[in-house]
Image 1 (cartoon, one colour):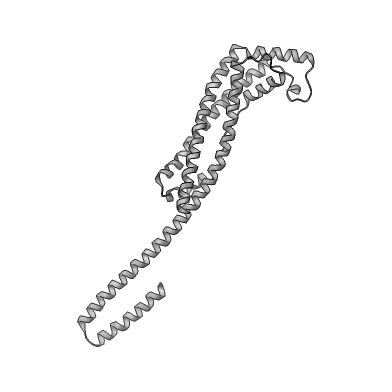
Image 2: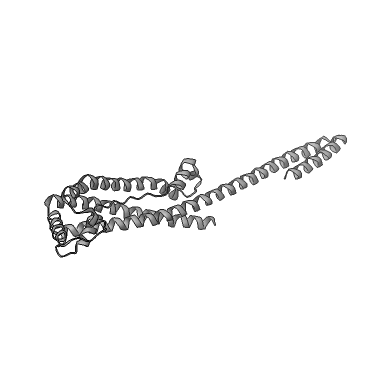
Length: 258
C-alpha cells in the first residue's frame, strides 16, 4: 500500500510540474483539487483496511476467549454434578435416620450412615480463566451483551451456592459431630474396619445406635440440617442449569464465529 502511494505521488508531481511549466492555471487548479480528492480517498481506504485488520484481530481474540471459557465451564459442570450427587446422597441418609426404622439394619450399614451423615462436600470450581477474563477486561470484547451479562453474573451465583455449603459444614462440625463424639463410644478400630466386632460389641453398639438415633435432640438437629441440605441442593440444581445454559450460549456464539 505504501509503495503504491509513493508511485502515485511521483506521478502527480510530474503532472503538476508540466501544468505549471505550461502556465495553465485553470487546468492546474482542477488537477490540484482532483489530487486532493484522490489523496483523501487513499487515506480513507488505508484507514478502512487498518480498521478491518484490527476488528479481525479483536474477533480472533474474542473467539479464543469464548473457547477457553467454554472448556473451563464444562469442567466445572462435571465437578458440580459430582458434588451435587454426593449432597443428594447425604440428604437421603439424613432422611433414613429421621423417617425409617433402622432396628433391623446390619451394623455395617449403621456405621456407613454415620459417615454419610457428617460427610461435608464443597464445590471448588476452576476460576483461573474466568478471573483472567474479568480482571484483564477481555470480557468487554464479547459482542453478545446477553452472554456477557450471564458470564458476569456467574461469580455471584457460585458464591451464593458456596455460602450455603459453608453454612452446612459449620453446622455439621459444631452440632452433629460434637453430638456423635459425646454419645457414640464405638471403638474406632472397629469403625476403621481393622478388626471385626465381638458379639458383646455388636449388642452394645446396636443399642447405642438406636438410642442415639431415637434421641429427640438428634432428630431436631437432623431436621434443621435437612432444611439446610434442601436449600443447598436447590441452589446447586439452579447453578447446574446456569452452567448448562452458559455452555449452550458459548457453543452457539463459537459456531457463529467459526
